[in-house]
Image (cartoon, rainbow, N blue to C red; front, side, top):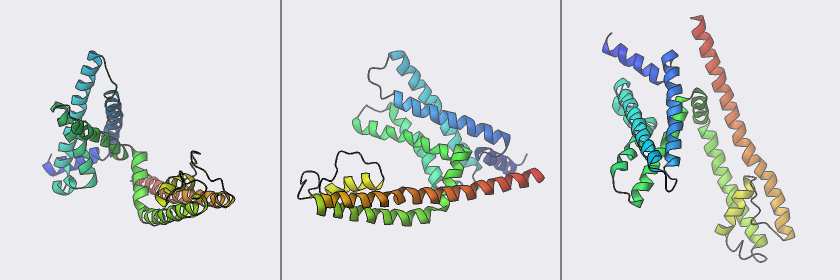
Length: 247
């Protein structure tokens, strides 16, 4: 088999194409989940020595597999350097580099860097077909989401200004400044409403009611954009599957 064909077959498998690709994607998904569990368990204080040793060995095995995957993707890529500097290439690299710090002294800064291993969770968006579809949908509507995100930021700021105007005199501890009012604005516009800070003046309560109505749109509009993009991606996948079956 020519080298070019071998690289193409390997590239298809790594991208989840065919039976081998789907099997590899499933294996990688479970490996990423296992990696997240290992990272979480490592933070438990006073682990039994046996469990700590097993977790260390599991981490070494997981890193070995991810390192082989990274090398395979570099080998299979049509332009290895472009893959290396791409988003997924950087994610793949950051997923294995922090593991090298496991051999370093237990300094606080190194413990923080080791948490970069949690970036492996991002690999789920490539390994799982449904999550990959979601990633494509988010990418396709990124422009609309960016515009709406900017509008939401402006609305959050205006909400903080408004509640500060109504409540600062009555509750100087809670709404003493516009930056302090931003916490209330974010919680209200996202319809979370923690209840730790709330208006007590009539004007503030009326203003809050208006903001709550606006907050429904803050949640609903992005959800609608992503849903529409997901439907488009799903229809495209179905058309590609039908075309492949006919061929």
